[in-house]
Every structure is written in structure tokens, then in C-alpha cells.
Length: 336
Image (cartoon, rainbow, N blue to C red; front, side, top):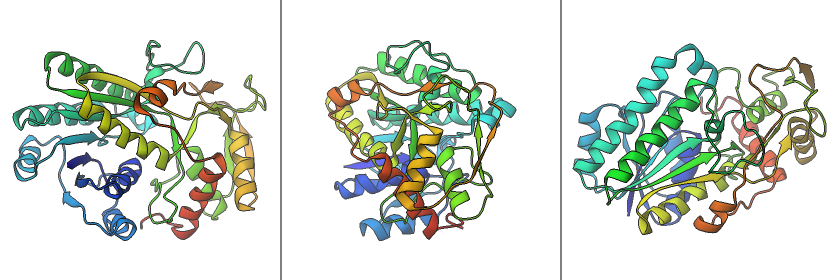
């Protein structure tokens, strides 16, 4: 079975590619390398011993996408391609809507013309916005608070409408929580450009000496240690969730939504201490003022995915910290 991964050279896409190849799937990657590296393809081959078919295209381009579907017998699509920085989305909302929504529309049009009926969408827990309570459950009303989150929710609505209108279409929407970690080989991992927006790559860059210290935004939240609590999930567990989503799509029609998280909230200081313990490295940090829009607690209820996808996380927080550091120390400058 041949699966198309749009944005498949990115952080989550590359780990999903490895898991798919290990399970005997054929993989086609479509990526314009706007925020990823071609070196990922060589790393994937080193890990799996298998080749990936690459189309270096922009998934907004209907002609290029049609050509891909003409040449490859695709049976399912996992759609990762998209811009993903919350801050940038606030500065350039039109850029985000144009890219993140157009790619989905183009794929849906081309899939219908080529009789491809299985679609897994890379959504985000940011769709929930500021929750009234935790843990977050799929039935809760969305409350997006930035353009990035709204582009994800708009895509969810488009995909649900498409599935409602086409009895042959199967759509699985996956709302990710906070992926961290890396493949245990240390060959692929998260490689942000510039100063990282996310906690773990910031910690690992402090550990490797690229940054002087970690900035923690706020220590006066109503949490056990005053710092913000989030649901951190190992990227390999997240990748395996996509295999379960493909299996689900192949045996169901319509549109279904699942949280992919551990169901456990860890504070910023929990992560710092776990990283220090797992890797025997001290992480200096300084407390800074809260950031606008940040909230105290945000973590998933994953019971629906546990039950209906038969998906469960396997990696511990220690695994996440150890694998993140293994990637960073072997690749201090990422893929460059």
C-alpha cells in the first residue's frame, strides 16, 4: 500500500515515514523544503534501509499534485504540510490562510479526481484555545485564539464537510498535543531554525551550549510549582498514532476526530528536572514575565484514541528527554 505524506520531511512527518516503512508501507513524500531538509531522506534510508519516492513540489500547486497522483498509485494521504509558528501566524495571517487552507483544498480536489478516499489530517490542540476545564476532550467547543489555530480548525471544517458530501471519503482528524523527543538512532529529530519556539529544543540548545540559559515564562500560575503544565508526547508515539489512523480510515467512512496526547500534564520545571536527571546535565534558567495568551494547564484526554484506534503511548518522560538530547548532541546544528 502506497501512502502520500505531504510535508513528510518535517519533524513529525519524517518519524511517521520511518514507522510506515517499518510496517511495510510504501511512502511518497511531497515537500517543498520550506522548513525541512533534504538530508532527512538519507537519514530515513539509513534507519530503515528503504527508499522513499520524493516529489519536491508545493502542495498548493494543483498541476504538480495531479502529476504526482497520475504517476503514483496512492491509496491514502497523511497531510502534514503547512506553516506552524503561532507568532508568525499573528504577524502574517494571510500567508498562513493561503498556505494552510489551499494545500488541503488542492489535495481534496486531486484526490477526488483520482479516486483516493483516505485522508489523515495533522491538526493541533491549539484548536481548543483557552479551555474552561482540563483534560481536553474531543467534544469540547473550539476556541482558537491565533491564526495558526484557526487555519487548523478551518481545515477540520472543510474536511468534515467533504466527508459528509462524499460517502466514499474517510477522514481522520488528529489533534496533537506537544511532541518532543526524537528517533532513538539520533538520526532524525526536531531542527528549528533560529531561536526555538518550543520548550524541549530550547532546553537541548542550552545543554549543547548554543544558548546561555532557558527562559521560563511565568512561575505564578495555579499549578504545583507555579509554571505552566502541558501534555508532552514522544514524537515516535505520535507517529505510531498515524499508522493507527490509517488503519481506522481504511475500515470506516465519514469523519472522526481524535486527541493524540498522553493524558498527563507536566510543568516546565518537571521537564527541566527530568532532562537534568536523564542526561546528567544542569540546565540554567531564569524566570521571565508571563506571555500573553499562555494558560496554566493544558493536557489531553486520550481515551477515545485509546479505545477506538487501539493506540497507547509507550515512551516515558525520561525517554523523551534522553532521546531529545541524543539527537541534539549528535546534531548540534540540526541537519545543517
